Image (cartoon, rainbow, N blue to C red; front, side):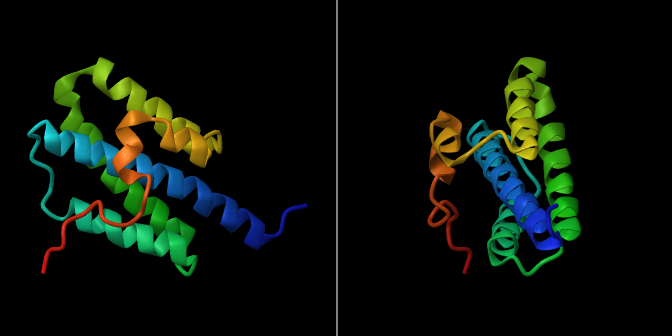
Length: 124
């Protein structure tokens, strides 16, 4: 039987994969000229820190990722189902625990997110 800590750790691993996919999606949409909410990249960066620290509620992290996902899906909907379906598939696999680091790094759209540092420009 899994302990509460093991369950939390498993969720955080899944949220890390989900975060990477959402970050890549936000970067791709930005490159396509889609205007995203001005704070979406900083929200994603803060969420990365929360996930890696392990000191934040998984419920809060899930809530934040749900909001970001909703924004990105709404923003990407103008490109149609053919555009969104692969992203939705990746997000589902992430939350099922079916993506590992090697799989994430082999997805071309996720290459810029492969490393957690340097993908966002400094805002100060």
